[in-house]
Length: 594
Image 1 (cartoon, rainbow, N blue to C red):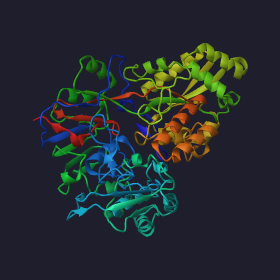
Image 2 (image 1 turned 180 degrees about the vertical axis):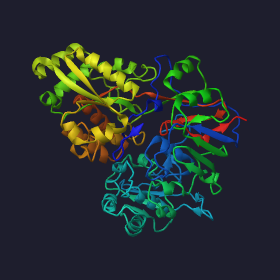
Image 3 (image 1 turned 45 degrees about the horizontal axis):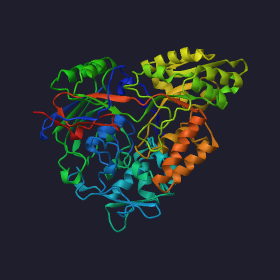
Image 4 (image 1 turned 45 degrees about the vertical axis):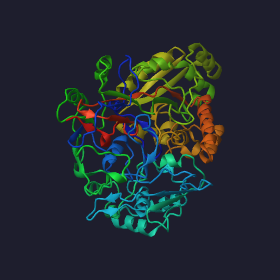
């Protein structure tokens, strides 16, 4: 999966192996497996993958696999627990509590947040050293460095008082260790500080009330950084070889794209970590496998194969596993719309026809969602969605404004386009199997209403960087429709991370944003703004729902499905809890059957 960096949660898939696109047989959502019995400590957990993490840097990593790697050795203020049914509910990690108005963590006006770091949370330095609020401040400063900034900065850059100005200045700093260290040490952020009365309490001051800020704090970017990290460029290979850990494991060795070995961190105290049980002694990640062979090793209980790392069950293996009701197979929600069809409103083709809402509505009626879902495994494993916000995100609500109706599509098209015919170009990833199938399905379905679809198949490696994110490409008519994916940067109250950057009008236009389709509606913009600054969740949720509805009324996008992720573990693994944030099981909470 290739996630578009620098703006929120829009992603494009480069490998369907990451997510389930399997059979059309019966299946059901499960989130964990547990053989029962008393947890066992000890042993080595072997995880097999087909590639590497994005970065060994908690303030920069922005991908599910990177987040999975961090779970072992890096902690953040809040995180997600490996508890079935609660895996998307933020809980306290380094912080002593989730801040609320009632516990004094949030000021009555919603503008000040205070979080205190647990006593006993230690860096694995010699000697071990307490993690402090100053480390937390340093970590977030590093996130907007001029070398490799965190991809989701726009989630909170304008929200924390003074942070945007700090980042603007930081971008002008020479990209070397000395200059970066000097800037971080000499520049403060008014909205990010250490409480003068307590070196373990970090204070955030916001530019406006934000009901979602607590949810944002569960992102790994809100992790502390020890002062030693300033001796290396952020996200660099050198830093990856000199990490310090405050989690239950430390990195014993790391050979990029080949192998990672995690061993117990002697500085970690179980009493300071309510989230990770750390039952196994060692975690060995091998990154040089292929999807088919990994699945075979897991199913045959090969001693050196326990769980996947960054890959899921191959398409061909799923029907048999489902039919056999294999207890080691877990299907879990992704919270992605994977994919959706976006309409390029800036395209000059067909005399700028896609700028006309009626034309887009005609296409909505003329596309068969059920046909496209068959290309991705059928409704049992790829349930349909008819709105931009997937289930599980506040404001999401089913609404089928455009039930499949070719006759109505033809009528609308005839009323809006001379001759009732269009020639449209669909851009898709030519090396992704389901993309190819969907292109063919769209060709067939839209031909019924007088629309000729021509494919623009491009490799995944340049799909975003060379096409979607380049404004001139869209404006010159290289493509009219695009297959792309949305996913939240955080769960629950996460509609901001899906609607603002993708449908938020001119401020989200590329190259600064990911509104690659140039959708700009004043009603939607106002609803997003109102929801963003709402003082309570009760106020913001209906506003997000209204914005979600308005996007569909404007026919800006054709959502298709929010599929399930298929994961498998060996019979030795107990307490395998699927975590949507990693699209994989949580390795810090499994134990091994002797």
